Length: 622
Image 1 (spheres, helix red, strand yellow):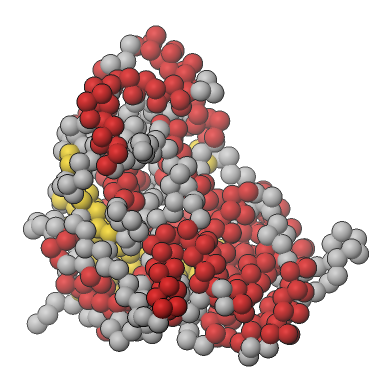
Image 2 (image 1 turned 30 degrees about the vertical axis):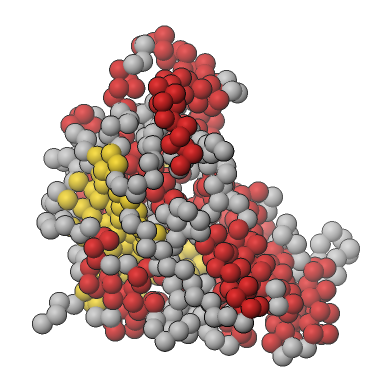
């Protein structure tokens, strides 16, 4: 059967299916009384590279005074109507990369060139046709048809056979517009964003004028008045709703579930269901997802339900939309990405080769803005190699998602004239060898891992601790910098009640944050709460042993782990930290905080530390 993947709508989330398949397999092994051994993927990494002369790109940025003056704040939110009228047409199309199933590397340069696309245009007449096509409701279909006609030889000779073996995961220009909208910094992309009035530029930072701070203030006042500080469900719609303390009901229900008091637990669950809703205020929404998780734990169906949630097909496009809502609501993502990317740029300022090893690359949302900034470096950009590492997917192509991320990043590098090579690795992280990483001499080496080490098992799962194994691997890599971001929480406790209390503490801050910054009727908010936070709550509350993959630790616990693994902590960059604090203070809700403790950058909401980030370097053996 011909498998075409011309859009992202049919793409499931990368991290979900692997965990779901393993959970299902384990249930069958348990039923048969056999010991379950998780699969180990040893698929060879896939690599591709290309070289592109940066000269033409550099010419358009000669007015830049200093490379250091630009800060790569990714995740810009642009006006949708404006962006649809000002897009790259040919230059952002991804490379067409036929797969022959050999697992060998391939070159992007031979299949795609934006310069050829520009040369084939017909001046003003061509631009008029393109404008008409952009405004046409069938523009995306017309575009795909035209591309296939241009590549008719490939389709006639071997294109269909290649797609039968492995699809090339091509993405339309509309979808790359969406990526640009969220991931690129508009002041550094003048060809795509011609109307500077849409952006407020201060001190080399850009913020979309379309994001009205008044909305956030109104939402903040709404949340304050809705439940008196989040204790419970306030009286609404006259006297139709009974006043209940949902947080207290959840706590009582957790105690009943823990002590196997089924009768009382089901009674409390019924009360929670009556007064919770995924469409209500922050407490009602939180109670809805915690109630579902408690009910699953009580019925013993936690692993099965989590597997069902994990295998639910969520398109990459929907993930990006939810990511956009999250970025708009809070500064956590771009704070981490911004600090990491700026630190990398400072480190590589005088070097010609940069190698980033990204543990948990997922969709690679962090890197387009860094690529864009590096393209503007005086003297030309360095050669960039990214080794993207993530958990394997089930099926015949365990590294499919990582490879797709690499193709997307390769398109951005081609577009901005940055020499690039990508290596895809999809296997258990503690089983990775140094040879898999293709480390070379005379390159600046950076290991990046933002908030994903919590998904690696710890010593509670087995005798050997995979979490420490990954840290030992990073030490053997011997990077110039190890950027480590953590979700600050103690919900990895072995005892259920302790884990429940910590999880509800973290979740209450997250839901309260959305209540203060995003309208309740926002569909992106509901999708993110359900598909991301709701799924994580189900895993932490309803799953145990190897099925529980969400295992966050506090940044102080990670401090002990990193020191034990023989890393030394690098000082925070005072200039970057001061800039970040100023941006958050001026442009975000007043309850967001950016602080420091020792050499950790701490990000919080209403005094609660949510995320922490620091930079490390291995201690040289004497």
